[in-house]
Image (cartoon, rainbow, N blue to C red; front, side, top):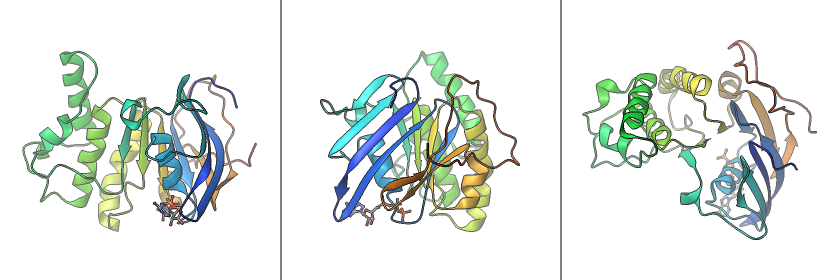
Length: 241
Ligand SMILES: Nc1ncnc2c1ncn2[C@@H]1O[C@H](COP(=O)(O)OP(=O)(O)OP(=O)(O)O)[C@@H](O)[C@H]1O
């Protein structure tokens, strides 16, 4: 495994009776899916990348920074990541604007204001800014959660089935926003889903998992400039290297 740019990860361990042993990498651009049936270990592996789970043996490098190896384990709050979960977990005593600004970081005041304007435009949040979050629809809450994660200016965005708690109409409502985000954001994304349509619509390459193991992984070349794929094309799924 090289230690260049992008994400390089290898985790071996167990949670309860479940054992995993995976190795994969992802480039610095576009959306990499972790895909597989329910219970195959997608969330566990994403939690390992985030440092929310500590694999017994683990290796995780991102853009040359060591997040985990045999000597060190960087805690979650020191990893430059944004995390969007299935449950938006918003602060119910705060307005949409306050939720978005919570934890917003990095750059000058002008850069923060510009990032805020871009994010609310991309996710169409302007009409919601002064509202409380309790009575937002599921899709609106998830848009706020995505905006909040982006405003932390993460170097890597981790998304764990962000649409799975939504019914079909809410999914259809939020998919265009996610598609825009995935195409426009310059942040690499690792995206979990077990929905093939979502994977085809949103992601550029797919790592498939089964029973805690990688069954297929794509090849990629980070020296090539990233060209967003036309929306009609499917993601790059290739046999394991
Ligand atoms: N804290 C835990 N204690 C015991 N077992 C766990 C724990 N967390 C996960 N597991 C088990 O590990 C396995 C993998 O779970 P994980 O949530 O990573 O799968 P997944 O592929 O994300 O599933 P889904 O698509 O249903 O969310 C499952 O069998 C699950 O029951």
